[in-house]
Length: 217
Image (cartoon, rainbow, N blue to C red; front, side, top):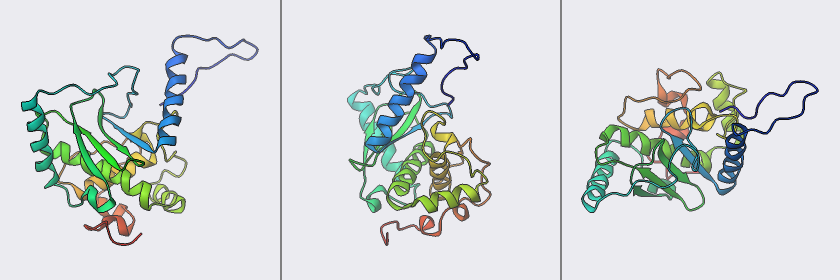
């Protein structure tokens, strides 16, 4: 996600409506990073709360909420790792335009924004992606992240999403996508940072390939 506009040499900066949403995105991104929250967007262009998408998920009827819960339980059977292995718990909310999941590394929660009409493999991918964010926050060092970017051929890419990159154009988002491909029964691949890896698990650090993430630090 690009930030800011271009100003001609010698010209006074022009404050316009287009610049304000970008400035707000930067403030929101910084606040999310400080709070330890990672957001996964539906597409590579992240939609930030308060901009072009509603900030609250859609309300589900009791029947729809029960169906969404059942769908998540089914999706969990398609994922080879669990949030509990990292000390996280899953919350289920109604669909939120542009956002599939949210990981709060302070509260240790993963929120999935689910429609009862979603495909199980898609929800499984969303869950595994968010577990990838949780694993990143708990287990990856700066050296691990730098090594991952080098191996993906994206040394100069920012790791965290924010003003300069959406989730799917950042190292963190790419890692979470590759993690999801390794650990979930899903054909989806949403990263826009690097090409789809032929062997997703091999692209991860060795410890991140394990079916049991609870052992070791």
